[in-house]
Image (cartoon, rainbow, N blue to C red; front, side, top):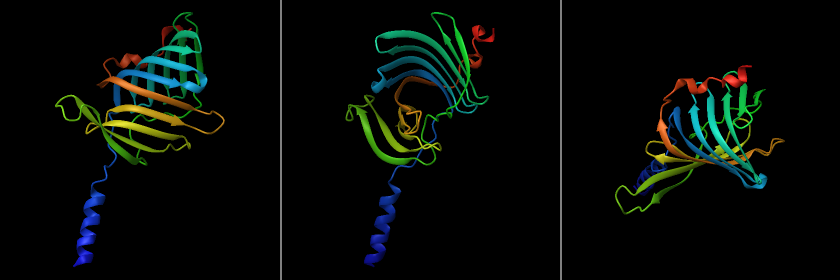
Length: 193
């Protein structure tokens, strides 16, 4: 009988570990990206389309004491990046060498913890966030935080110890589901010349 009770207790406890969730496949919002080691800080309006593996960001970047403005389009589905300097109107078109970064909870994610953000005891003044970690297919480590139960991305931290030394911290806010304007993924006209 004791064995049966212990087994039931283990099953109940293991069932309480939060499972991964599916984040929205398409959304627009704002993003902050930082890399303190390289004195890099960026504010951006961001469009994300996991279905077609593409992103678009209108960015204000600070590197050290220099500030610049870019319109950056990543079309991973065709392996191209379009980066338009909004001040000089110069466009660089290059082949993408880094993989598409999924913003959400990947299939191989491990649950770390759950927390209330805001005043937990006050109605409508908090949200529940779940944090997961793992490794992407290319070996980069990640930590991702999403809302619960809707799985809206709040934060993504990525570190890759290869020659790219990719290391960044992103925070997402003002997220709105869906893509209002599908034309947002058309390269800027300055890049077609």
